[in-house]
Structure formats: structure tokens, C-alpha cells
Length: 254
Image (cartoon, rainbow, N blue to C red; front, side):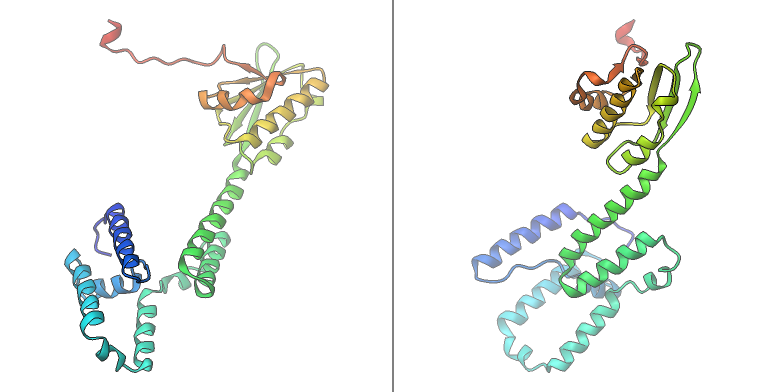
């Protein structure tokens, strides 16, 4: 809103120290108020002095003017909270709800509902988890292969896209060992093995080719993928001889 970047780490340290001191005096810990920040910015307070002044005035009211605060009618406080809610809510999200992907719309509605039912922290955690699962589900659809026969008669499967728990089912459907020649090469130049589920998928694929009396080779694996594939045992032959090695010439080689 101010076209500037804050320092989240400093804010977290300050908030942690403040909550610790509050606990020592028998108080209750809290977090930064988004509504208060919105009101400060909309009122013209764009610098650190705005937040410091708000905190000091609040402290002064609690210590020296608590009797005056108690005279404020509850209805007036409810009105203030309504103003805070109206200023905090992102009303533009209602206009774009029908234009964004369904997964994003679902996360938006879910987080809003959980915030009302429980609290913002719980809503953020659940929202991040659901958004990550939706991303994994959509990303799993991007894996595909290009196939061709090389000069040696080996069938090459050029894998495109990451291989992880969300894409292994589609990955297994891309291969037909009974129809392939005796030598098959799985090309990983445009792909990577991301987790243990991917390792098990490759292991199961190798077993299918072994049962069919055929060999499966893996080519152009990254170093991270080779480390993961150590758990695959002897079922998978990792072809590292054809992996390219790139070097950068510098003065040390002269």
C-alpha cells in the first residue's frame, strides 16, 4: 500500500520480545493488528512513528485512562469493529471470484470461513496446506513423454515434468513394457525425481520390464536424483556414462 518493503524479521523479533515482557507482567500475548495498520495507512500514517504512536497511546489509555475507556458504550465499540472489518476486508475478491480458477476460489472461501469460525492463524495454516495440495494436483497433469527409436534400436522415453507423489499414477500409464523393444532408455534431461514415491514408481516400472525380459536404463539424472535412487537397489540400472559433463574454462586451466 505504501510501495515500500517492511522488515518481517525485525517485526517478529519485536513482537516476540513484547509478548515475553507482557507474560512477565501477567498479561496476554498478541499479534500485530492488521485492522489498526490499515486505519493508520488510510489516515496518512506511513512511517514507523505511526505504529509507535498508536502503541504508546494505547499504553497510556490502559495505564492512566482505563476509567474513561470503561465509559465508552459497547454499541460504540461494535461500530468501531465494523469499521475495522469493512476497511480490512478485500472487497475486490468478490468481483474476481468467478474469474479465478476454482481451486483459488475454494481456498479463498475456505480461509474466510475458517477465519470467522476459529481464528486467522488456523485459517492461514489450512489455506496454505489446501493451496499446496491443489498446486500438486494441477502440476501432476503436466508430466508427459516423447518417444522415438534411436540408431541402436533402443526406445527413448523423454520425460517432461517433475516426478513426485502427485504424478506417479499418470507416469505409470505412459509405459507399455509388453509393446516396447528389449532395450528402453528413460531420459530425465527435462525432469527430476522429487520424492520417495517417485523412487518406488521407477522401481515398480523396472520390475515390469524385468518380468518382460527387457532392460530399463535411466539417463541424464541429476546428482540429487542419483542420491535418491540409491534406495532402488539393483532393479534399476542408472546409465551415467552418457550424462554430459560441462566445464567452464577459466584462468586456472591455463
